[in-house]
Length: 210
Ligand SMILES: NC(=O)c1ccc[n+]([C@@H]2O[C@H](COP(=O)([O-])OP(=O)(O)OC[C@H]3O[C@@H](n4cnc5c(N)ncnc54)[C@H](OP(=O)(O)O)[C@@H]3O)[C@@H](O)[C@H]2O)c1
Image (cartoon, rainbow, N blue to C red):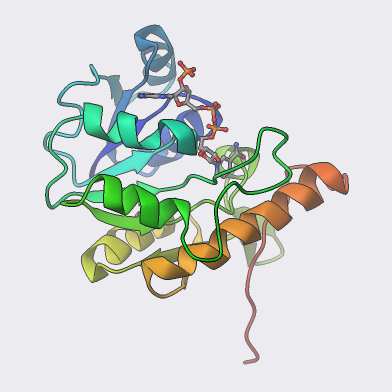
């Protein structure tokens, strides 16, 4: 698939690494063009592109900026009408130990309102950058799960296919409204990783009796 990654930070660079490794054609754009060029240069199969028009021709756009930058970043990449937008953000407080919105909305729903023509899907927000960068295989048959929530079947299918191509299990988490659950789940993951000291080599998953 042709994928545009917006953001060249911890998550953006890990996406570029794993998506190119999985054989996708990856374009990366960032506020700082030099950062995008550096990340693309480290991964054959990736290219850095200017922000204006970065979404053109993409099968999916991965939004890897802070939640506060999300709306402006999406509006800068060109028309998103009919495009799959994978929202990985968590609306974190400045100390990372809480969420700024929730209960009656979510980052994903607010982002969907900001880009009304796009097909927004929530995914990967519970996957630490370290886990994404190092891979989904935790050994002994254990694979990290990616929770996928959205109102567009096509967008969910695309996000799920991308996750599977990178070696993740996929958990269908229902409609976009269920991002209201997924964002606090990421909050718990962050607490366990940083607050409780388990580190960032952890991931939430879901199990079912055979
Ligand atoms: N880190 C994790 O483990 C993790 C896990 C799950 C989900 N997330 C979520 O993923 C998102 C990214 O996290 P991160 O850790 O990768 O953050 P990060 O390292 O700070 O990277 C964010 C990147 O977005 C770029 N950016 C900001 N505004 C932009 C714009 N308008 N256009 C293009 N790029 C723009 C930033 O550029 P500058 O460098 O110029 O500011 C930066 O490179 C956040 O919403 C976070 O909550 C993170």
